[in-house]
Length: 367
Figure 1: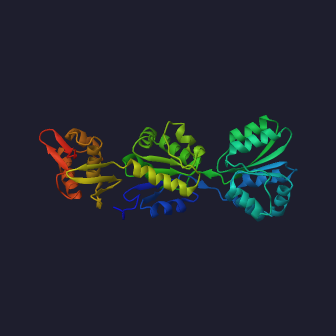
Figure 2 (figure 1 turned 180 degrees about the vertical axis):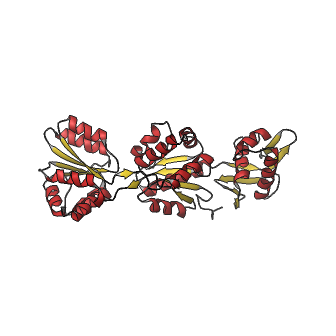
């Protein structure tokens, strides 16, 4: 049992565009199988006319404060400005402004560029940044806010309502994928139960998947899946926003980090894995596999679907009609009998699954 990795047997879908490989590698290291279906893509910074226009606007007059929200976004902004021949001008303008850094990564990016932050909240939250600005007074000030893939309407609107002129710097804009095929197949996998968790690293990716499901008539199924058998994990509350709006429960790490997100996915899937004793054997269900007395056993989709249906109420007799509805794509009584036979073989024989004449099947749960 100790040799079985925590995510072995589970299939996890990744909708991210940026750092998808990093997240995938962390999950594979824990034993998971990973399917990629980018729900969004990033507009290259040097090709982004909106970013160029915002940078030019920033340089047109002195700026009192600059809010930097992400390290990678801030570095990318400087690199893009350098490519446009505006690097020195941007650094000069930034050096004369009060620089507010959301967290340690962006603080490091500022210092690497030869700049110094005037404030960085211990909570690493935009809310605390905003409160600091408001308490200092922003009426009549010119403030630049570096965005990162998504707008910050509450942050920006609150500053404007308090009298500030706000320049939004749209670093890394998200748009739909060039090829929607992979994310479309990922959505199918969530609905048919072949994908067991969906970790999200950005709100635009969650919103894009929801929009695809809505356009194709699959939104009710997506909400049902993510509210039940499929784990929806988000790196933080902002990312969870589009899902929360639909009432979908999410799990989130204590710290908004990729590594912490991978650990949260692993811990949640393991905690949700049914464990029971039946026919004198210890059984743990793992995605598309089972661990029987510490031994790893692959289980095909149809037999696994029946095992999950039986394990949902251990010891209760489950009728053939109920088991037919549990089979992927449905079927008939013969299909149930065939799948039960394959299930018994997969579990190593024995008396784990009992036939109850004229009624159905049950797990022979040990008392």
